[in-house]
Image (cartoon, rainbow, N blue to C red; front, side, top):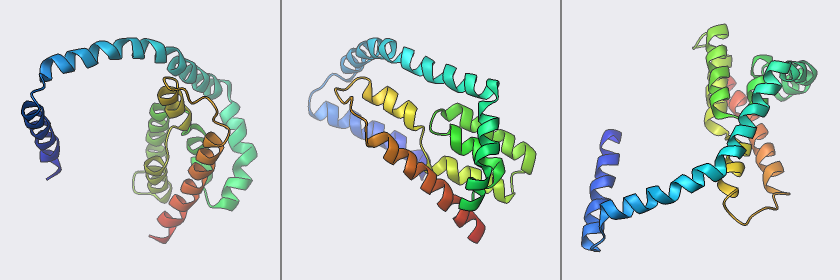
Length: 168
């Protein structure tokens, strides 16, 4: 059924555009032209996040943080093998999936830690990436409450992910 959703949406959108007498191709080309300056504007922000994450990992700061925070995370029910994933997930999506692959290799795909890692990735978001990309083009600049609340929700989601995986 899910394989038919995208074609049905595409055909429905095309029929609606024809009904409204909108030239689909020209509208698509205009939108694509507007996206190029947007990509150019957003690229420095994305590059900065990617470089910062690479520097954190290669410098060993994330390993040190994992060692320092392991008692707290273990108390909260998050296994030590997932601390780096929980810490880096708000910054990078592709790095998170690389860490997931590392968890699969280390613990096996059917282990408790691997199931927790999958649920954590499914219930969390790359908070700083999203705020950088989406809010860089808006007038919203005051993120005093949004980012801390998003980070707290990410931690709570990780705790609940581990709890649910333990119960199931």
